[in-house]
Image 1 (cartoon, one colour):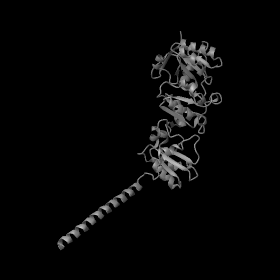
Image 2 (cartoon, helix red, strand yellow; image 1 turned 135 degrees about the vertical axis):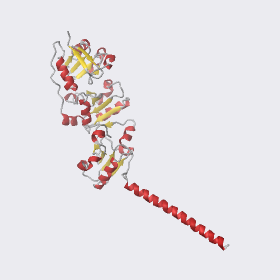
Image 3 (spheres, one colour; image 1 turned 45 degrees about the vertical axis):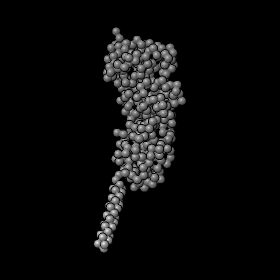
Image 4 (cartoon, helix red, strand yellow; image 1 turned 60 degrees about the horizontal axis):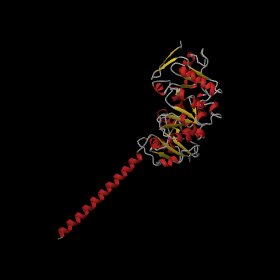
Length: 374
């Protein structure tokens, strides 16, 4: 009997040791995991998309800065959360002067998503500098763009690259036409004032995948943002806003001037050499309108050309503006010449209008051949 009692006591003790041992192991493992978490790059104060959205406003709210920690040229310039500034993690130490002086300012860092450490590492550095209200939007730019109705903001450098490269896109000036656009605008941009968006939306491309870039008068101007939202509601899928707008463009790149236009032998025609110089050097300095049928246009045209078939020109005649020279083209000079005289008859206030009197062949890759009329 005593033997059984001793055995039972030993079993109880053994069980207690095992239980306590397991508990100690669990506690140790938890402590170890916590230690590893603290050693990791993850920041301790993570915020949600809804938290970020309340600060994405025009004009930018005071007391907050949203910071993109991704590389500038490779990522930020091409698209970022509206109102965000660029302070790449790789250049953080060199750009601390870009941070606000008030250490109580709310700083929200983000980068390329949950697997991206750049925003977390930047947040740790900001905290070491003494900033007291630092957050990380860990889901980052991909999460922002997944929300229906959201769009990206782009930089002046990106817009300049698109203009110089004659990329397939449409730049839209959302400012009032006479008061602002007519006095100066980004090369190749068309005027669709936000106040007249619904009336002029037929100027937007039929392709809903076309890239649209809206701009207006700078960071305090809401017009481009309003127009962008309207375009998205129409079903356009690649909408961006150049929020720095025309003031930033003018400060960085000035205003483009058209190379001198030399008149051709025929009334209203443009000299072929002058035309080729413009196409090569400053194609955005003129409004180039291809009046061929859509089927012909689809086989190849100049990158900056827009297609208004000659039989549709009259009903769209009021969309033409005198802000830059207009040059009509077709395959032989017949329909472009007809377009020229239509404008002279119906829109006599437009003084700078020309047509190319020549046989013109344009290939799909943008190469072309011009043959002088016989």
